[in-house]
Structure formats: C-alpha cells, structure tokens
Image 1 (cartoon, rainbow, N blue to C red):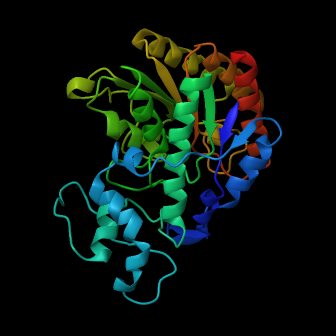
Image 2: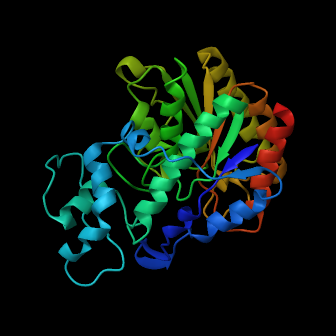
Length: 340
C-alpha cells in the first residue's frame, strides 16, 4: 500500500493543555508522527504528497476560518502579553452569532476548546495533512487503496471550527476529493470518538454517506453529537448514521457493529470509501473507552477490504502507548493482504 507522510506533520507540537481544572500532558504529541511512520516503514511504500494548494481545504471549510488558521500565529502580537500559543478561554455559543474583529474574540469564534492551541508550526502541519489526504484519495482511485498519515487528526473539525485536537478535517477533504470522480462516496469512521466535525460538514448532503462507530457520547467526548437519532437533514436525511457502543465494548460487539455499518454502506452503493482510522478504540489507548485488540483491528481491516471499493485510509486518533504502532501495522497489513 502507498502510505503518504510529511515531516511537517510534527511541526504542531503542543505539550500541555487545560483539562478539568488542571494543566495536563497533551495526548496529541508531535512524536505520534514518527512512531506511526516508523511502524510502517519497510512494510508499505512511503511517499511524499503532491502539492494541491488550498483548494481541497476550501472545498470543505469556510474561507474565513481557513484564513484565521493561516494567519493566527503571525497575528499573536495582538494578544495581551507574550504567548507561546494562540488560545482563548472565551468560546462562542450557538446563541452568539456575531463574528468579532479582535484576535482574542476570533480565537473563541473559530475554536471550541482548550485542547486545540495554535503554535508556530500548526498551520504548516495541518496544511500538510490536507495534502496527504488529497494525495491518498487520488492514489486510492489509481491503485485501489492508500493511507494518509495525517497528524494532527481532523474529524472533530467543522467547516468553520477547530476542536478536539483537530483543525482541518482531513477525512472530509479526502471524501470531497473522491466525490469529484464518483457520484456517491461513503465515510466509515472507526475512531473511538464520534466524528462530529465530519458529520457537520456533510449533514445536509445526500451524496456523501457518513457512518461513525464510537463510544457512547452521553458521558464522553464530543458529548453534544454522535447519537443514533442524528440521521441528517434536508437532502442529507437518512445519509448520516451513528452507531454508539457501550463503554468497555471489545472485539465482538465492535466487529458486529462494523458489519452492520458495512451493510448500510453497501446499500448506499458508493463509488469509493474513506476510512477514518482512529486507533484509540484500542484496549491500551490512554484516552480510549473501548477495548479493541490488535487482532480486532486486523479483522476489521479484512472486513472493510472485502467491500472492494477504492479506499482512502486517513489517520485520525490513536495515542501514545506501546500498542499504537502495532495496531497500525496490523490494520494496514491485513487490509493489504485482503485487498490483494
């Protein structure tokens, strides 16, 4: 399998963040890039992405939001005091619809929480992620399958908002790129967290089916979305499906739900598929809530590959633990073998 990566992915380097009243170590460390890259080096064909510019980003994101991300670091002098990262403690609510002018207000307007700081290398990293996702989509059409080592992740990013470690929605970028070729595209998100940003981007569209398997959000991030009753709106009615699982669910219920998801995707009859590969469903993940084993990831890959669709696999979550590189290798190796 062609595996796209870019060293710029490590340029976004948060070390701590404010969580539940205390500063804690940030789970989305820059070292994730090297760990995931090294896990597949020698096993898959590493490749640099092509340069696609910002058009793939703007195809799924608000232009004002993109400009904010691109310019925020260079505008940090507008914030009070000396800053190592651009961050706010004031966040817009749905009832607050006016876009402010000052940087401190804009940060709260375009970001959702304190886990998603903008640092010196953030824009370079997230822009590179979009190039990776776009290149993987193109390669999936040409070769049947491809992997994008996107870091930081993206599926919590809405069209106009960052949150949950995510800035640019790489899964949405890949899906929209595939949509340029196929009339219907499906997204299968197997991250432990609901892909609320992806859902939001495509919620009123009937040409891109979004299916998410995740831990029940009633007491788990993202809390406010990811419930079974969210099925789309307008033209998208019936084209969004959430399959939440009880916390602690392991291989058997997870794989059974995966089979249900794939049955729905088959009925949709897409021309191509995006897999949002979150490895934080693993039993060893430090912030996960499910108990999927390495064998479970391999079996999931075999099941997904059996759909025989051009497939772009986009890296989402999966955090620092001994099992992280092993789970990535197991998934990609099994997918490759089943698709051959």
